[in-house]
Amino acid sequence: MPPRVAPPSLADGIHRQLKEDIFEFRLLPGDRFSEGEVAERMAVSRTPVRQALYRLQREGHVQVHFRSGWQVCPLDLEQFEELYDLRILLELEAVRRLCQRPEVEPNPALQQLERTWMVQPEQRLADGRAVSLLDEQFHCLLVEAGGNREMARVHQEVTEKIRILRRLDFTQTPRITATYDEHGRILGAILTRHSEEAQLLLKAHIEESKAEVRKITLHMLHSARQKAQATQG
Image (cartoon, rainbow, N blue to C red; front, side, top):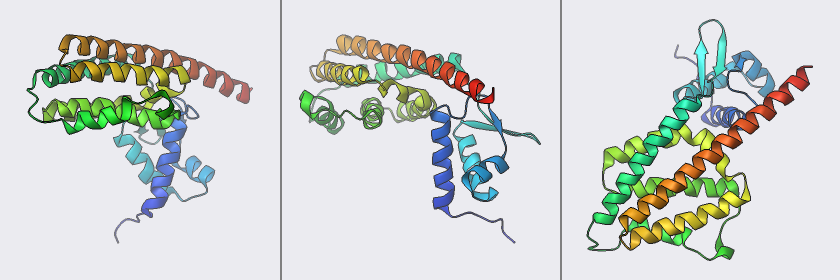
């Protein structure tokens, strides 16, 4: 008989919940747990839990240990820094190519970004999650518009690996406002073919985001661990 497969909607729901638990540090980096514990907490069978966990494993969020259950992947801040460095290199090169390309006809990707980011303050979104998704789209579209498909593919892989921490940059209102301002200036420099200015603005923007995300991450981890210790005590 073929192995049992849970309904996609059930496994997807468990996947989303576990991912949210990891992203919000309700499951801390390094925490160990079993399929049975998750199944009992969510009042489901182990089959959809297992499917969700293997999907999270492919995404790099959890790892499985033979005979000892599952573990949330430890947070590797050094790898985080290296991935941000790679992201910067890819995006700067994409912007350089964009600025050097002769403008035969309007670029659809840049037009889309203009409509999203170069808007009046009252038209700006305030929801952090929504802005986080738009921010990711902004940077991915810039690389895609650069015209190198392999660069875009690698950049997408990097984006997925840093998403768990990068979204924290939009949990504070001042960072949302700054993102709109900075994206607008970057686009303005690209549209006027000021390559060096665009690259400087882009690098400063990403470096500032990286510093904020690291600071927020360390604070959230410290708070979550203190809460966990208080609960256990």
